[in-house]
Image (cartoon, rainbow, N blue to C red; front, side, top):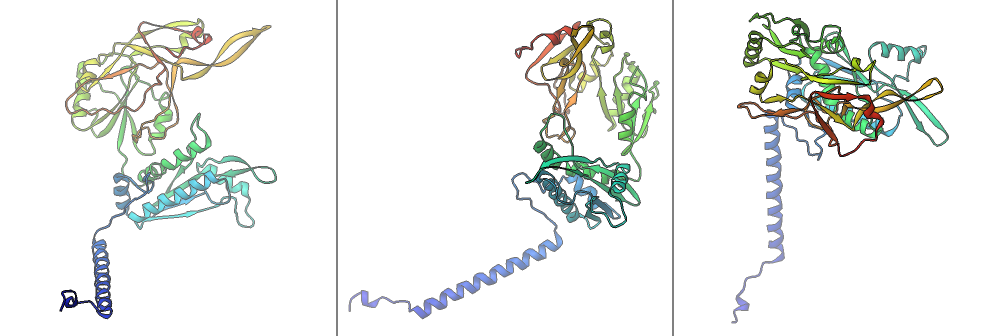
Length: 424
């Protein structure tokens, strides 16, 4: 008998039973894996964001803050109804971020309200006035329909309530010089921060202390009134003179040294240094060069001169050197200037004042992320130097078309009348 005749062939019925057995084994294995994952997930909570831009991801600090809530946070979002596509995207993104918040705490609740859809007997204007009184800002949107141009009042804002206290939140962050689409995109990216900041401010039983230093010619209380009011929502804002007292900064979390004009004494420098060594924070707002627009009221020119503040050695130890110069940038804030006369009437034009650079933050750091363009006045450059244990992050910078003018810096309004040279 030939070798081929001795081969054993698998009958179709046996082959079918083998395939069926393998399918059953795979099904049972899959079910066991699913059951195991469910058991594990009941003990371990994890969420995965698979989107490319990580739009559903929130920071660890936000997660921690939300998990620690001990009462209901109720968010009323006044962004509902029929409106242009950009605002629909903002509405949907707001819903998504609130759903993400709620995934980490059952204490997050929300509702979306159409402020134009009022009950019978209620006036729409009264509803709008009530929302404005609560701190919400309306937006007048103009758009084109099939028949004609239309306009609509929209409140891209929310009210966050916690333990009987409430706080308004503007969801639309308008930015100077940006198109509508860019404004919507930046507003969407800022949603987590704006909502989390409101919740965090309401949930703090005791506000941390922040102190403006009230010595060495720093800005007085009237000059920092606006920022003090903004900070007071989240912090207990104080004014503290140093006066060589070691305990003058006791209990303070952060100090702000705003535009000093006198040289610091060594004893007070030591107090500030000890404050930093013990975990305190310092916001240095320093002009190494003195220049003022007041000096240009009567004449077209003035000088920018260096200020001696006796802080160079201290800042150098922290890895920073303030340079005695002024920056001129083609991308600058426009100011009104007389460019000619029609008879006896002066002709006023808005021209860029190169000593007032307009800085648009592009860093992803949370301190400046999605901020509006920032107006600066008579700013100087800084250098970073190596310092052990110090990490440096650049937050703002001028454009590539920047010129450095060393002190004493000649400042003249006539520079605006000349055509700018991009090779500045």
